[in-house]
Amino acid sequence: MIDHKDAISLGIDIGGSATKMSLLVDDEVVVLRGEYHYRPSLSQLADEITRLLDMVLVKTDGARKRDIVASGISLAGPVNSEGVLEQASNIPAMAGLNVREWLPATLGMDLDPLALTDAMSAALCEHQCNPVQGRAIYLSMGTGLGGAVLDDGVPLVITRGTPGHFGHLDVSGGELNAPQIPGSGRGSLEAYVGANMLRHAGVPIEQPEKAMGHPRMQKAVSALARGIRILLSIYRPNYVFLMGGMSAVFEPALPMLRTMVADGLAPAAPDHWLIERAVAGPFAASVGAASVAQAKVLRGRPANDGMTETEIRIHQASRRKAITSE
Image 1: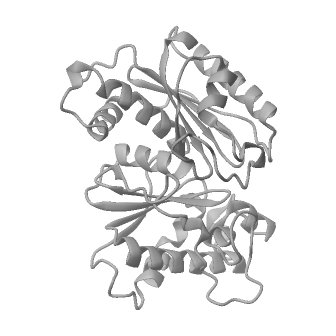
Image 2: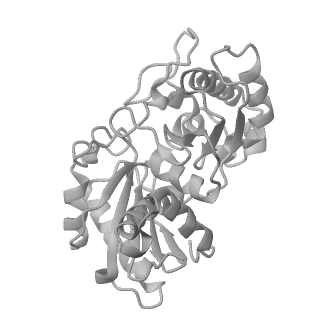
Image 3: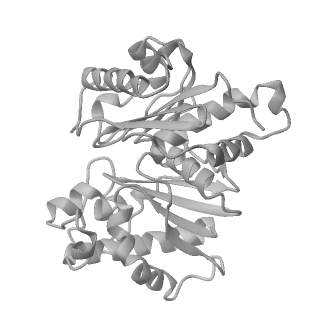
């Protein structure tokens, strides 16, 4: 059994519409969601994070800020090895920011936070909850679209902390006046399936079954199918998981999506593949960031010698109780 005493870990997910926070304390996960924001300033984000940390600590059994020994931050954009957010379409104030310096200064804590993309953080959390074998692609669907690839739970990283920028795939199929959003090219996958684009087109995304009847939603499903077909041929995964808030909107389309993907699929794709909605909840990215940070601390303890960080994360996830607060 892994001794995780004194291994309290903080996870922060700064998304395109809200900030979420998770605190791993013993076998519990305490989570909070911040208020909706649109392109907040750095000072607004700092105030929000500070407020959430105070609130999440109150919900624990006596944990204090100085008890936190690990932290991870999940970001909606590529992060380089120094912790600099290289691109931030939905939070432009953070573009070029070194979050490994900014977060400790903001919270007044002597920590070196891990910085990951939101898709990678959420994928690692999903793998802890559902540890599939082989290669899996995880599509994080929200304001935009990000992606991660895990091989038996180990991240495949090719560039800028990612396996490639899935949301930037051109899936327009030559459509005239294909949609475009800031930060990605015309006809990009995230321009077709992103929450704001669908909402602005009149798709009732809060009602997934009703949304399926909207013509713009049908176009989005077709674009998603084209994107997955490309990914199956390049990465040859055994699984494709849809994650994030928008995965619920696309869930009613899964049978149709599988049929569209399979129709005339290139022989380069694997013989056997599955497309499913992920089981991890809306706090997957913040929980994933906290879990990775905690596993690195635990991995360095003599009692856990011989265990990989992936094994530690899966073991810890199996012991955690249900999320205590939203």
